[in-house]
Image 1: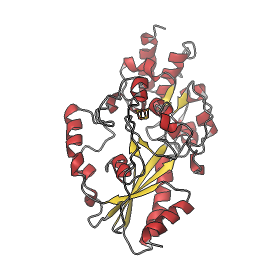
Image 2 (image 1 turned 90 degrees about the vertical axis):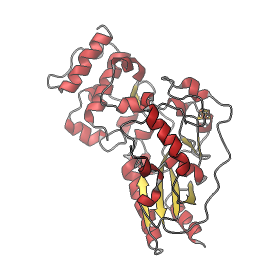
Image 3 (image 1 turned 135 degrees about the horizontal axis):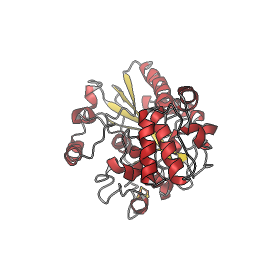
Image 4 (image 1 turned 30 degrees about the vertical axis):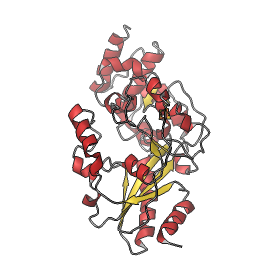
Length: 330
Ligand code: SF4
């Protein structure tokens, strides 16, 4: 068995069967794309601003020869509360932690072969969807998501740079074709016509909006049940119909993430946040963002839900509360 097959076998033993290999190289071809986004102000604060860091894997491992791309399916169940909801990707254990644990194991396996291996999980530096696409793991849809054959777009991505020379895989031939369903369904028109996701505006994507610290009033109505993240463009994608569910037990949804107690979220203290929400993929932006979104949704969806807020609410929450009352004329 060659080294490539050994790595694939090891990943399979760990429950990972969607994996691809591509050449480690500087992605010069993406330079105009990143330059253009910068010029048009399409970058947001969660993105790596230095274009070199996004294009050059040799900055991380000068002797890199191959990049391994691994998809981690996260859709564990189809049973959801759709009224107020967290995005499907946030329901289980924080994926940064889960993926890092798996990826470190794979790196150790490669290192035991006498080679170097360095893993990345959502580092926002290297273009992970582009790498996954080059490696044959999936294709990039018009909604900018990486779409795999087996799990649709409900996947997280991780990459490993290694100095092992491995035969690269071929990109998939599938594409969106003439489908425009997600362009029409996007509540903020953030998906626009053009070569797969090239012209999309992430700064008005509701997933980003729910995570942003400062929200203008006109977003209050748009959240419409979204507590963190937005699944609209994925839920309606034909490639997400009839897919296989994840068997990665760490992504099994916590009960409190599936069945939402809006009142508990609105009154959440540090202890509740630490005990129940911090360990999920919705925890990294902190308690105040979740409380704010819960208040926005409670007032928006059920106008009588909040008559007053707790006395010790922070100035941040208090500010949103009064702005909401004014906005909805309550
Ligand atoms: Fe592509 Fe259609 Fe899926 Fe959008 S909904 S990503 S256009 S296949």
